[in-house]
Length: 568
Image (cartoon, rainbow, N blue to C red; front, side, top):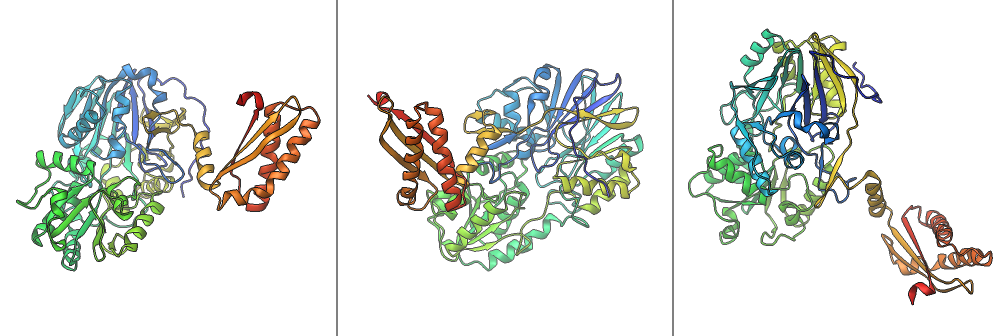
């Protein structure tokens, strides 16, 4: 079994002349934040620039970005940013990168660039140079010769990219699967994979998300009969929650709704925006007369209503979460409504999703999800498909990408099973530096690569220490203690006044500790200690010991010491 290295590496040496350097700045050890930098002959090429969505232990965080620090002083050397497809975990951080250098050329398929363009307008950024490509196209940018290959995924127009340099040929799959009966008829081009394999793939970067799943990923078309049965069995409104970019899933819902004589409305700004783009470009075929405005839908009887909503991951501000909390401005859940969660569970979102499911069930909704019906299939290749690709491509070196640690290890073991030597399988982490020199990929070092948090309009200002304080506030509570001193007379003239959050009946709870606080403060005053910091520390120790022993908690404690002159 392959073992995952314990990374604590020095900074890498300079790249050897004629070598290709690969630096993943996201997507290794996590589901999201995908971004990989390639360096050759002093020039850089970036593949993908996505976001990671926050989990419960990231309170107040909106998004998590790749760390651009490793390339920030070399952005002028970037030839282009290649985008493999239009999911947020691959394009969501593009506006933040373009804030640092606004003229980086973007390369991608028609739908991908349209989704990015909408995002740039939302951020009030001007659109940069676009190279619109499709499968079979070749494009030379500086020392990088690119070739694009069709791959099947859960969003149309996804592409793998082959990167040729003097150091060799790299094949990056992006996210993909091998659905042989896709809704749009566009399959992963295994003939191109085989042709590139015959040419000689020196480094194969391949999607690891489903590497632990045996066999082959279920066909997308297998969902339609299940949706049909759910619609047939529902006598009231149907609400379908899925990713705002899952065009294929929305297409299936539209077709089934039309077959059952129902009208459909979108709920959620990103859903409305993305589906309008997909429809305008011909990737979404909306049956005549089926779409209505969400507010118009309310005038129809429940058995004719279908809502397609965002919020399948339990996002607190999403349409579905607000519906579950009965706080949506015009959608009120009723007893007997059916809610379909037509998406996967992104690791880390389980608690949030189950909270939403419980909220929906509380109001009498029938909740259909992947756990009790085939209403979602993955967009990623399972182990059987990955084995097939390894045998077709026959790479010299392999670097699993796009997945948590267990996924990367499982993918690496599949490569070894097909004959790739174990010492040619690179198991990496974000910030690892891999050089391809004379056909051999070798780990050369590591660059600093942390999380960059987006908190409202703030980017990168929130630190891990600040997050820790927020977690303490959320989990353990908060206590403030105000004491007012007459420093000249060495006595307490007011307080202690205690305010707390996260405790039942805080006023009564903290009466018992007030004598201990006064004793500690008066003891210091008798010793002529009037320094506010020392008194605050004493108060913190007294309250901390008491609340730990009494409540078994470690809240944030904020003592405030004031002097009478400070109040005048």
